[in-house]
Length: 274
Length: 287
Image (cartoon, rainbow over all chains, first blue to last red; front, side, top):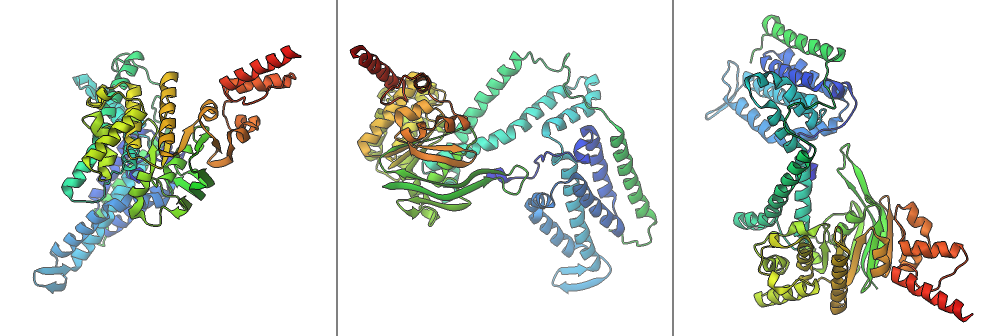
C-alpha cells in the first residue's frame, strides 16, 4: 500500500532532537551537510558515519525505521559505488580487464561515497523530517527567511502555501487509497496489461482525485476567510519559537565537529585523500 | 446457510511504525444468505476494515475469509471475480464517479466484467431504476448531479454488477431522511429481485432496527455480539457501553416498562412503539 512510505515522514517523540528549536535544526542540518562534504579523510568519514548513528540513537527513532528509509535509494547507491569503483584512476592497480580497471583508490572512494550518502540521508532525515512536524518546519523556514520581508518577498505566503501543501499530502495519500479501493471494488485492474492500458486504468483514480482536490481547496479558502485570514499582517502566533540553552549547546557541538573535520583533513597523518 | 464467513481474522495497519494500529483482532462472523445483516459500532471500532475484508480489498494478517466455504485468498488471481460477486459500496461513494456521463460511470464495472454492450445497457438501466435515478439524468456528467443523486449513481455502479452479496458502508451518511429512506427502499427492492444478501454498516441503531434482520455489534476491533435484532436490543446496557445511542422510541418503551407499563410487540422503531402504545391503550380501555 502507498501508506507504507516512510521517507520524509514525521515520527512524533519527545527526545532532545525533537525538542530543539526547528530553526536551529535547519541551521544544524546545513552545518551537517557542509561538514559531510568537507570530509576528505578516512577518520573523518568514519566519524561522520558514527555521528549519524549517534543522532539516530539520541533521537530514539528506531533503527529499523531509518534503515527502511534508506532502502529506496539503495539502487542509486549501488550505481554510484559501481561507477566509482571502475572509473577512479589511482596508483595501485589491483585488477584489469579490457577497459575496466580497479584501483585501490577506487575501492576506497566507492566505500567512502556510500558512507557519505548514507550519513547524509540518515543525518538530515533524523535532524529534520523524522523529528520535526512539517507544520513546525515551515514555521521555522518562515522565521529564518523573515529578514527577506524587508525587501518585499512574500515569505509568509510561501510558507503558508508550503504548510498547506505538506498538510494535505497524507490526506491525498489516504484519498488515493480510498479511490483505488473503490475502483478495485468495481473490477479495476491497475497491475496488468501494457503501458497504454495501465495509463488508461489510472483515469478512474485521477479524475476523482482532481475533483475532490479542487473542491477541498475551495472549502479551505472559504474556511480560512471565515476565520479572518488575510496574510501575515497583524497575525499573532500560538506557538512562538524561541532559542534556549540546548539549542546553543547543539550549535556549538556541530560547529566544533565541523572544525574538527577541517583540522583532521589538514593535519591527520593518514593522508588518504579522496 | 452462510454465504460469507470470517474466521479468526486479525489485521493491523502501518505495521512496524509508531503509527501501528490494530484494526481487527480475532474476528469471527458469518453472514446468512438472503438476509440483511447490519454491522454496528462506534467510530474506529473496525467496521470499515471488516467490510473491506469481505471482498478482498484488505488481506487479513491471519485468519480466513470464506465465500461459500472457499478461502478467497487461496487464489489471488480470482479476486476480481470475488469482487463482482461481493459488491462493496464504500463510504461516501460519490467520490468514485469519474466518467463523462452517469451512464458510462454506472457501466464501468460491467465493462470491466467484459459483458456485451446490450447487457451493459440493460444492467445500467436496471441499476438506475433500483436506486431511483431518473433516466434523463443518465446522459448528464456526474458532476452536475446533486449530492443525493451522486450517491445513488455510485450505488448503482455497484448494483450493476448484480452482486450476490451487496455490502454498503454507511450508505445513507449525510443524506436527509427522505433520501435515506429512498436508498434503503432501493436496496430492499434489489434484494428481493435477485435474492441477494445485504450487509449494512451503520452507527444508527434506528437503521438497524428498521432494515436489518441480523446485527453484528463491534467495539474496539472486536465483535462483541452477533445475533438477531431482538437479541441485540435485549441488552441495552451493552449498546450504551459500546457508545451507541438506543433509538428514542425504544428508550421510551424501556422507560415506560420501568414504570410498570409493559408494551407488547416490536419496540425498536417509532412505528412499532406507536402501535404498541395504541394497543396498550385499547387494551386498558376494554378493562
